[in-house]
Length: 260
Image (tube, rainbow, N blue to C red; front, side, top):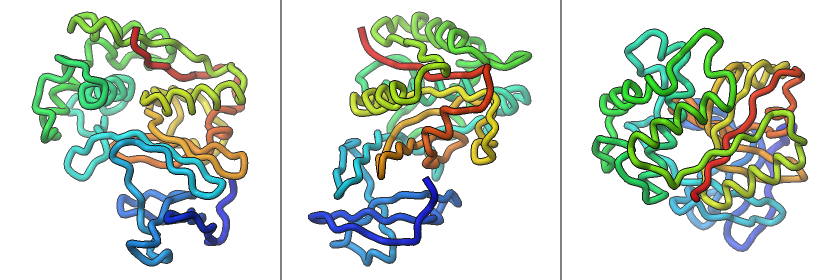
């Protein structure tokens, strides 16, 4: 979806504002929510959803799952890791770490993160990546298949007597329409989604090449599905059709979490 000049459509209280919007963390977003009762529309106030509710504003549907903060960061980052190969190739382990914390905070799971949850510190998080590293350790070629992630994270969960969390691979060869439907269903059911991108031809995806990251929100506008991609302690809205259509035969895919 190409960014549009700023405009708005009325709703009962919330309006949709389009355009390139520079956020405090330096990222840019093509769509945001503004509450016209609390600040001028031109201020582009961000509507936060602590319960991950769906907001229907005119012809826009948006849902974001809650996440967690570590200082000013949105989730964890492999950049913090002290071990060189984790800095280079620790994205799968960090994705599993963020997932584990999410499961404890929002899915009622226990014993996955061994440190304080009420105030997650960067030091504790880095120690947690060291715990996760043997299960999803960086390797030549990286964690470049869905089954490697499922096997490694599955062993971590089993070692902590967690048997309810299930993982299903969704290969990158799947049809775009079916994949968009499953992405929306997972998020609406309260599950964040690990995503693996391998090679990609589109320049907007250069930061996501050969990389694991999380999807924890979606927004629909004018038949375009945007997804909220979480990585390196920040987030960004991406056009899902661009994300999914890599232009290469070899593809990554998604991990679908569920409970048995």
